[in-house]
Image (cartoon, rainbow, N blue to C red; front, side, top):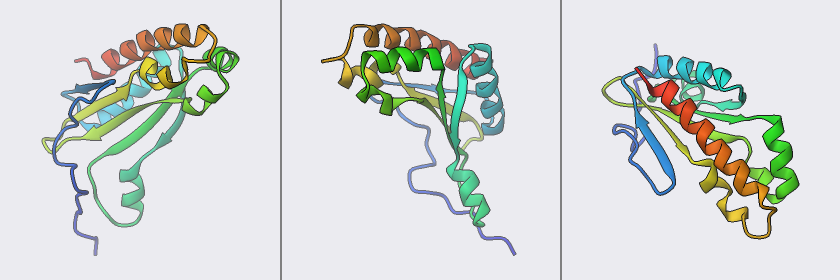
Length: 150
């Protein structure tokens, strides 16, 4: 006998935009969006460094919740430059994409812009941290557009 589906509070509506976030509703199902993001990361020559899925964890315990995955993305040349500019900023890498399943069967791709993630470290850091963040903003926007596109 399987457990009845359990929905986590607040998971029935797509994510709303927040300061510093990019939120891209997509026409894709959750599993399709996961695959498209992985392909877009590879195409952008970035590394998929971490992944965590609350929905996979819940499923392993007999619960069903809407799809939910966090994917950390970065690349070693950016890591070296970031650390040369600010060792404390290193805690922010990898930068994450957040994939969430919507009640209508579509999925949303969200992330905090790298420039927003690294902004608290700009003061006292070498100028290259701002440059790294700006370069990553462009790459993350390209990855999101490719993953969320038609």
